[in-house]
Length: 186
Image 1 (cartoon, rainbow, N blue to C red):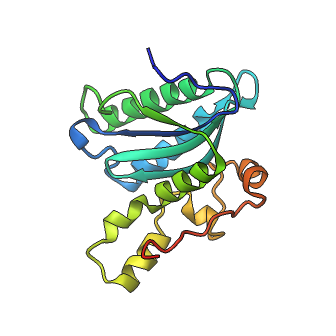
Image 2 (image 1 turned 90 degrees about the vertical axis):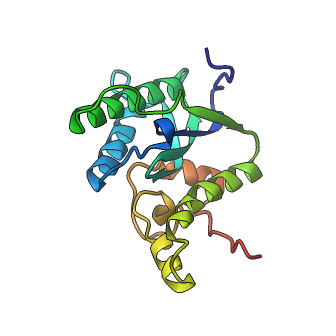
């Protein structure tokens, strides 16, 4: 049983990684499939409602992060069950493997205030920086800004991402593009 109980209208940072820190996304088709599953999984087809609002996400080769708000009872648990089981089944069939894909049950941290919400979204969006550390600063900045498997491009106004709940972002931050990443050097 999960120790953290998800509250209605609560905000959460959800994350998980591959077993033994192995990659869970091996090609662009895998990333795309995960995002398709994510879009479908946050919606209750029976009731025609979104059970979870997605504010931000990033998919890295061996892990993922989501920032969500629970809109319906058991919304996050249902989302993660659908998403995890569906993607693991797809991955295991595609790569002719069996067993656990994810290291353990997903992790979740409650986001208690707006300042922390901003920080978590920025943290999620900064995850891809590690992929480009070997590049010079100019090239690193370009690659990082265009990282395809993150909601950051949506926040920057470079791409309309249908997985992100734009209305949710506007309600919280007063705009569908609320955050500019701060310079980590100060």
